[in-house]
Length: 503
Image (cartoon, rainbow, N blue to C red):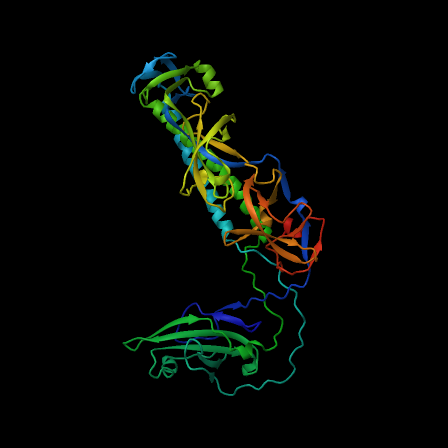
């Protein structure tokens, strides 16, 4: 489209249209001529020597019941001893429930607040993902003014060309202050039931003048003869788009944030969402546990089995361990996941590390099974977000100290198929296309090249493990920058690029 042409968008219709309505402008991007800045990888990566894959998981119990000391209620009596055989429904212990209602309400409000905080953070992320990056306007080149006299058209409106279709609308030379009536529109119809009309206001009312305003009418003649109007944005013919122009008009409809700033905001918000999600789920667990305590003050056996352990209530409260552990011959299970690229790396029976979010304690478990169907859900995985995740079940000993329904982190050790010193690159330098990831790296010839990489676990929410033709000695470009493409010239900088801090 011709540069510099203002496009009028009419927001309302009346019998008399005088001039144009709202005025927009064409995009003008200019041409990037400066070399693309590249930075050393060593400034934007983390070496993570603990060669493990990290995922989140949730604890369930199979034929196992743990009873914990309440922080808000006084334990009044324990009805069983270690080694006792109990039946489902037998009483295990009792609480004094005189104070429960206030504390239970506080827990309920805490759950609601945690849920609201999580929702607000997710809304913030959706807003961040909708932002259009800002790029500075291109430099403008001075133009020579047209000094040749223009020949005005004596009588307006003046028909230019067109057959009234959407592709080639009727073109009329118009002028500010002109109006039209229904007879003017109806005279263009003939046998047609709809027509497209382009109205052009030009400098000095001349056919050779620069287009000052351009707007379009789409008119439909209904069966009762009434005319129904709507508006569209016409396009000038190609031969007129190539005319010389004065200084281009730049319209910035971006968010005001650079692509680097948006990428950084996205990574920070994703980390915040993860933390808030943990807080929300822990609050739910605590509320449900207190709710069950408050019902009648008595905790009953859920399975037939043996009392494996009884702890001192005060010690158990401080230590986070159960007061009573009842086993029906089962154990704890952790529901976690494994990425699609790692399923064949682990074998049933492999040891994994399970860390409690509530106590920070690390426990050894064993991989019991890996599912055949991918799963979805945020808590299932904290690894590479671009791959499918498969359910994994980890068995943990009944006396491990875990709590049913609590959340844990699961670390799968490497099977040795990857370098133990994985390169974790800042997320803002990694782009994805059709499910594959790549970076822009300076090649041996000094030109920019796109390098495809395999990705792995995410570290601290800001770095992703990458595997392929990239090392800490390479130089890479911010992939969202203007002019970043294969074959672009590069220039080194040891300083952080301006966009990193300011855009």
